[in-house]
Length: 282
Length: 262
Image 1 (cartoon, rainbow over the protein chains, first blue to last red):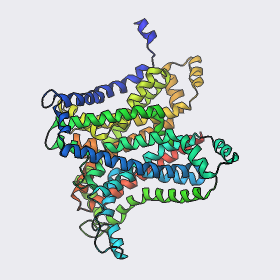
Image 2 (image 1 turned 60 degrees about the vertical axis):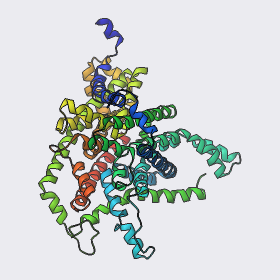
Image 3 (image 1 turned 30 degrees about the vertical axis):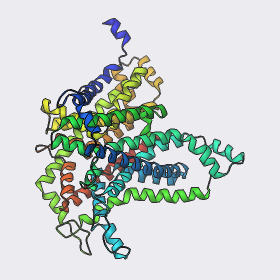
Image 4 (image 1 turned 90 degrees about the horizontal axis):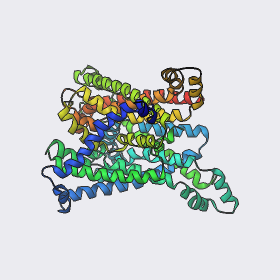
């Protein structure tokens, strides 16, 4: 006992409650998902073979990946613009910008989805306004299609894209930029050849974070897609709650989980996971 | 780079983007004031009938109450567990503790739909489905990493020499924690508690899977309202949610400003 005490730091005693809880109630059932994917309804890789058969399943996976890639591209580019302006703004303006960014971060996803429903519907505010000023004669379809899902998702993901970029931009030494200018580089040369490469860790972290979060996104696609745009998360929920096919759902979840863990591993090469969310605290 | 044309252009763009992030949510306010029985923009006439309906509806009120109980319990539990864990990890700080820290952040980043599936599967045999305990436990596991992050950020600025001094002066581990460490990381603990509260108060995906009749939280009721897409009471509820979020936001902004000064 004494020997054991000497080897184990007493700090572990207060780490244990949370750690044990997460291992027992979270890690356990997640590992169980992998297990289910090869045992339900019968042992073997039958569930995974379904992917190869083509048809609906592979189309859903493809739709999900495509929407996630487009969402990530828009969110990161727009997020870069916000982060850049924020880092280079004067102190007062900076705090206003940060306030707006965090406010949007905090507004409930349900409230935001509901608002988009009101704005983008056939009789929504956007269509009504466009008709009033005579730009369109008929309402245009802004939701119940991929466009609606993309608008909702990009809107939700931009703040997540900004945070890792902020961390990365704040750590850049401004003197490097000054040196580049002194040596005769133009503003745009300095940006493209010095600034942008220096923010690579932030760009990678931001891209992967948004992509990961988009992959499993449920609320916005389910509501703004209106049943027309079926993504993996919604498909999993239908399998579990309606058709009770745990095997298929577990297989899709296992693939998604595998992808997420791989991307997290890449991300951890570029930026510490705990600092990814920390950009706003400084 | 400084004050270039591009920089100005980008700043204007960034402001527009930030407004784009915040303003759409505000449309719930006019919609909630419509005098009509269906979801619509009010034209000239305004009415508070949907707020009246919200506050006199037994269903909505019970959802407010249930969400409040669950979010407060989750926040308390996650704050205690997360704070203890953060202090422990900070004290140990070895290769293994960093591994544990990365592991404990997983619930925050693993897609919610997968977490929902995991809880659903385990809660069935444990008999926790559709119960307060089940929701509080699940939300706590999702929220504790938030607390871990905010408290760890506070600890990063805490001088370990203070802890040494306290111990040299004869204080026990427990006294040192209570009288020296905890007071200095208070802003992080409060911020964590607030984040945990909001996370639970807003949580919908996991909740959709593990609750059914007995426990019907506010997001759950809103989700139904949104999918049916007719009753303007949802808009009134959305306005109340925005108001609560703003209050929580102001509180956290004041806290973080105070901690920045200290």
